Length: 415
Image 1 (cartoon, rainbow, N blue to C red):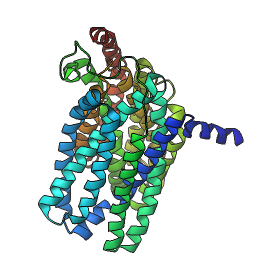
Image 2: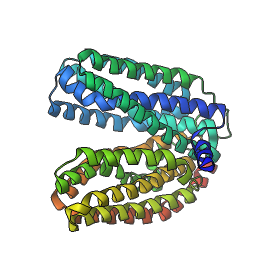
Image 3: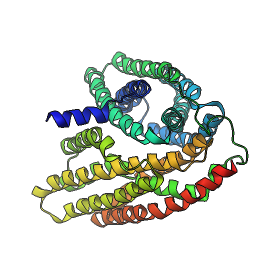
Image 4: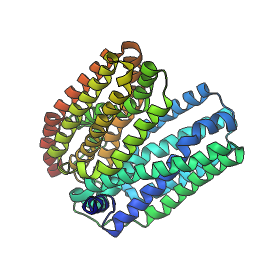
């Protein structure tokens, strides 16, 4: 037991001072995010007074604007540096979240929601670029794995704290939630400014010889981005597909879905760093992506199998399928980090990170509709179709990454 605990501590606790600061930033940010997301739907409908349909429309429009912001944010990171931009982004989000308290008209709410979506989406390539500049290719993937585990820890803490506001149910309690989230964003801005990245070969300044928007013209990298984005449909499975399927098979969604979410969070917290090993190179990351595709295929087959068993066995089989899903999720995340760090040429890390984030944005748009259509309209066969897609995309990841990796040295030499 002592050996296991020491291993967990080694996995989760960063060793360097810079990594510990980044861990603190991640913990604070995820706690604020967990507080807000857990209570935001009730805040928008009960406190501000919008209908659920209006909230859904506005958040969908906001998501579209966020989708458009990732590539420009990455290019700005290459030109001006990720650290000051990320700090400014956190500071702006602090102000914008506060403005939610005063957005009692439809137009005001729409503007604030769109600006927050842009800030949150832009933060993804900025954080990835900053992590790469702080730690380099050697350790950036492991650090991202540690940060993902810590993010889950903070999200659990935030959700628990939000429960206090939900229990109180008063307007003042929800305003306090908004205020706490705004304060966490401001703390993140200060911590970000304290992170100093050493200059590494190939960093800083624009690289000559690579035209504007080079990443968008790198069709091999675009293919890798789309493949990784399709594998990331496991998020839609977890957040939409599984709750809907539980409702269909058992006519209930609360308790069993809570078990699924809690087990998912804990397993990612405990295993993300350990299972991310081997993803430090492009080919190693591609192998993790392929492994993820096969595991997600097995998970989908288990979900499909719940349609053929008695009600007594449905719940245990759903939990088993959800646990298998976690391993596919972990391998996909680790593979995506290795690919996004290894394939960009020198001086273009931010721009390529912005393009890679488009794959995540694409699955956020397509995922809910695709998973809902397959699970609701097709049923068990829909799970099988989804699983075959995961297996096929995972298989393609290795040759796609190999082709993109062959071009990467040529682009670097041209730079």
